[in-house]
Length: 478
Image (cartoon, rainbow, N blue to C red; front, side, top):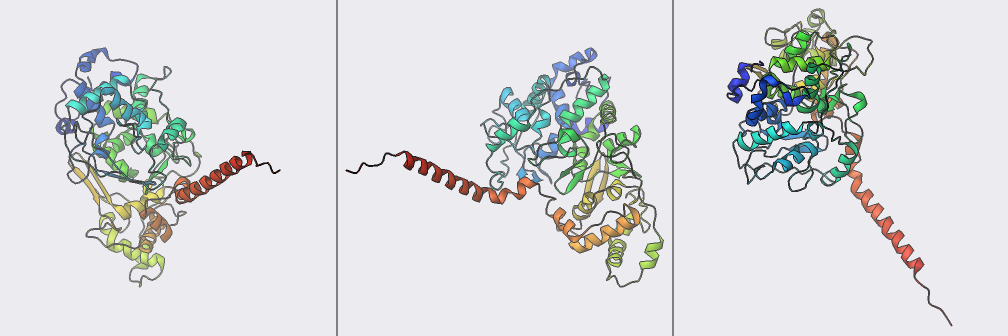
């Protein structure tokens, strides 16, 4: 029998003999747990945890569970999550099972309006019918109704036209439900369902095309998510996690920290805090089995992200006492004053703070996560353990608020001495990440949509007028 970890029992209440076998998650059923199917609310509670619903639909700093109001930063603008409690006034209390399923898997609300794919319905489309029944039962009967009305999402034109999502869905929404691969093991299929559907890994870890749809040909090879970068999690031994052991992958998914490898921040920290740490070991093992089998996309040559760097003492000694005018001197002084107390002067870290060498945030081929962590900080709670790093950007509370140049200088100091020295950070890079990350082409072209639309409309009207006048019979002179 699959046993629930104590953290899930404490956080989610007694689930009886649910055991989370997920017979509905793959074609292979679990006859030994047939009684679990008679308790759809308990199973739905588990599925909602695995789907990480709370991360987006619960506002930070004391928001009511699932009452919405969390502001999701996207390249299109801030999207506020909706209330999905059974409130009939503000939530989904009036949704039938069919309407609930349509919203979750097709991205269409009860009133016919289209949801934005910040709600990962493109992944949830794979959820099976049986599991949708259990999710509906849980949200209608196992969640406390709350009448909180979240702030409405107001994106700039043309993204404010929700009806345009109908065309987007026709092009990019695959409505096929999950189908087990008969050539793979039951554990692999279970991991595939968890990864592809419920945990919606591809939503963050797959790059997107110019229309912001996932590029399936590069599945799980890494993608930008606002100011953060969700790294390659394929089996590539260089850019991905192919060089990680099963134990390391398991530890990361359960805790968000593997010494000498990586630590979770940003959206991944939220996924671990709200979802992954609560899954039973069997589920984590299945996810690891599946990820091990995802082929790498990037080149398999070079140095892996977690192999860069070593303790640095010579540079620190040579820069101590200098006025700090040059970039490397300024970077050192910022590091010495704001970073070394936790990460240590040689960058080796300690029991509570990670080392800066052999660290995927400093050894990767991108600067996003290093800069974003300095700007926005880190907060991750696993069990009773809290991992915290204060923000040094615009939202800094009690730390020094560093300028774009300061953050670029200290980033370059860290990269040159502990990480990948080939990566260089400019103040413009910091400004871009502070502003939410690189904007895709569709967003860059958005300001021209209205004038372009007006110009096209004028041309069309002029053309129609010309055709009408041309066909109009001319008077006969006599």
